[in-house]
Image (cartoon, rainbow, N blue to C red; front, side):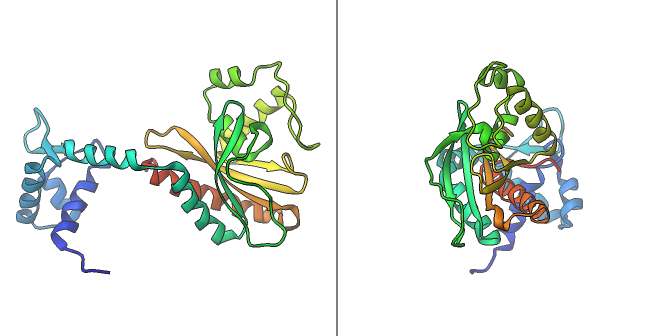
Length: 257
């Protein structure tokens, strides 16, 4: 790894300060928070302003906010994002940690479509494939995504008289019961599937958000019942949440501090 350039590091430190608070700072604020010399901060702020990374705040002399250049860079980054490719990378890292099958899925209508998948190395594992479509209400990723819908949209997709197919005896087939389950998922922020799509597999899932905070996908960990336990479920829920947060961050989402 090459040597880090101190001036560039300090300039980036300054820019990252604007991600918090109300998004405006003065030079004294920056000096205090970064513990840098006043002359250094003045020179860096002047340079960043000259390049449109920072602009003065109208009506607030001496205060700055982010300029157009960070927005342009962020927009170009967003254009290059590929949810499936980013999801595959994160799924691989999660699978390496737990050695179980990891999926990333999106919602289409009342089905989920798996867009990324990394297999467990165990001989006994869940058999699936990227591109596969399953009823959302039978899967942890699907229930997570349904739970994230606005109530009006959820009611349109799953009306009171909806006929919910059963994939196993444990599948939820009553819309009212499904809504109760989704309310619990919404409260916990984690979805669990107990042998609802496969009689031999249980799963946990967490939401993936884009830069606007909208849930755009879900990441799940699927485990054969021979390796499932309530104790391990807690560990997997934390791991799924961590993986989903990592993928969300790659998509530009910033968690509230």
